[in-house]
Length: 218
Image (tube, rainbow, N blue to C red; front, top):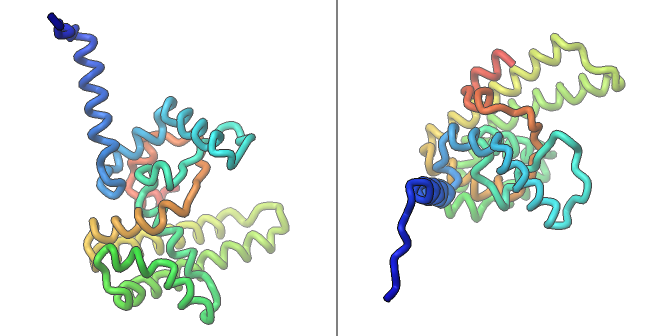
């Protein structure tokens, strides 16, 4: 006669934790909370796992110490929406003659998300123009410094402008199209294209701060 295993208290606790973890990872990436992203990004074992997975892919052999990759194909849920918005806006920093082709890169994901293609770009492009104008100013300031580091007060002012432009663009798009629908687009269209190397000095408390607050105080 087969005997059923007896679950000890310890076994029961472990099983509960495993099931909870499985339920969390089964969530679509756009449904993760800021707390969940922060917790997973700073977890030491999760960092080691991400680095090992990236190395085993053959894309890198030596990694800079103190940094861990976030591979958007493997862990899209670890990106924050504002990080994905940043990439979308920068992708539109091209000559006007190339802009239509850049837009077409996202047509499928825009339509799959249930968004109107033309309305989508009418909403996004004015913000991209503002964002990239500041981005280019920062690049020019960096160039003029000739590697000695830009003038700090001016650099900080531009960095705040860039951050606010990004936050405003994201808030406008989420308001226009709905938070879940627009975030679904970001995680389907942008995250798989990205790999970020983030400092292991990241901490959960900082990551949980609202992005607009970081714009002003960082």
